[in-house]
Image (cartoon, rainbow, N blue to C red; front, side):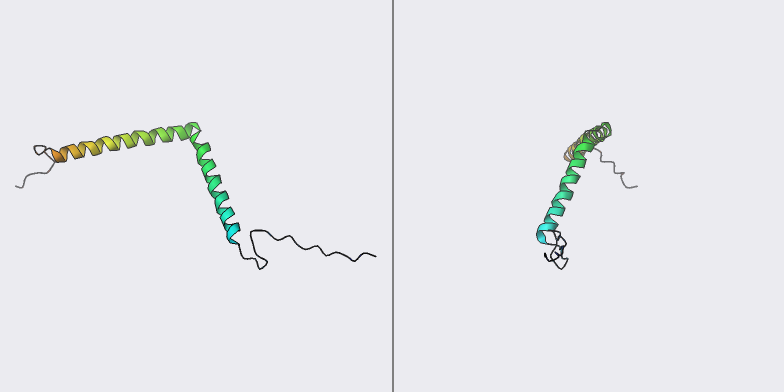
Length: 88
């Protein structure tokens, strides 16, 4: 006669027997979330909306760089009116 076997519940490898998350389990969870986020960004960039947003960002970055160059040039030009009004 065989003795009845008691099924032991399978423990999640990311937790200890006391239910505390292990360092390995936490690391795996973080890596999985990071990989999912990277994949979502890559997929979003391949959509028409994503390309439009990227193009708008690039246009703004170029405009900002041009404005910064203009401001720097104005600061180096002593004869340039910086917009300050002379005192009355």
